[in-house]
Length: 62
Image (cartoon, rainbow, N blue to C red; front, side):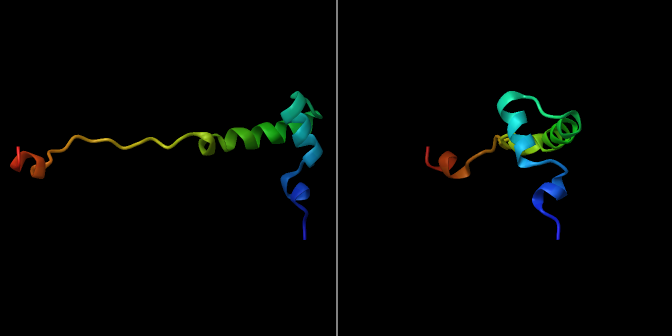
């Protein structure tokens, strides 16, 4: 069974270095940036659906 670090291809120390100082070894940096860019959609607030529609109840009693 592989550890999380083995599955990711980087160590937690390397990830921490990228977060805190923006630097780590080049190969780890490539992996971290690739995964960061691939998960960009997870850091966005989903769009809210809005629509205009007639409310018949309000129209009946006004």
